[in-house]
Length: 159
Ligand SMILES: CC(C)(COP(=O)(O)OP(=O)(O)OC[C@H]1O[C@@H](n2cnc3c(N)ncnc32)[C@H](O)[C@@H]1OP(=O)(O)O)[C@@H](O)C(=O)NCCC(=O)NCCS
Image 1 (cartoon, rainbow, N blue to C red):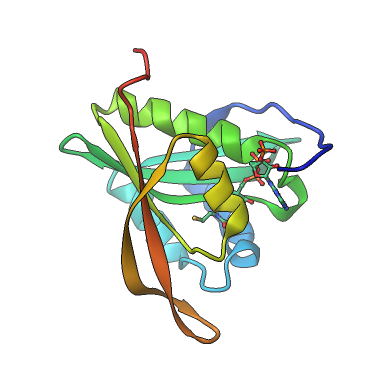
Image 2: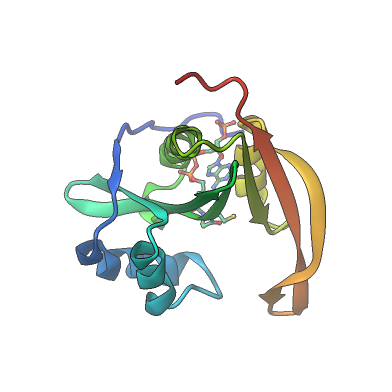
């Protein structure tokens, strides 16, 4: 999609309570309708698969996955503005696919705003296909925006 970019390599590690302040800083700048800190804490508390990537000791990206009954759902994936376009989103999504496989999921689902062209491009390039639409799912400045539901089958992921 972009002609020239600097790729950064970072590994994902489990998110801890102590990461939440930094995670919330990124959450609030990345989304016009961010999750609350309480939602983020609940994701950790209920045992969702919660991950961060650090660069220079600071949270550069985070993601949250739920997995049960052979399905996984990407609930959040977010890269700090200063680190976007450097390959972290793709690496983190690859990590989530592996984590989903590790949890026994055979399909991963997510929702995305159709206006979020970068995210839609990333997901399509990673094998996600549109499987449905949730009408008026997201709040927006001009009423409500639909969500595209995308799915990726994990049959090609090795153990
Ligand atoms: C969507 C998001 C997670 C992608 O992460 P990222 O680290 O920026 O993406 P990557 O660097 O891994 O790039 C993924 C693809 O998107 C493209 N891309 C990234 N930023 C772009 C930009 N600003 N403009 C155009 N293309 C861009 C890359 O070129 C790459 O495609 P390519 O490999 O075909 O060249 C990130 O932009 C983000 O956090 N956005 C805000 C929160 C959000 O929308 N989350 C998703 C909610 S569903």
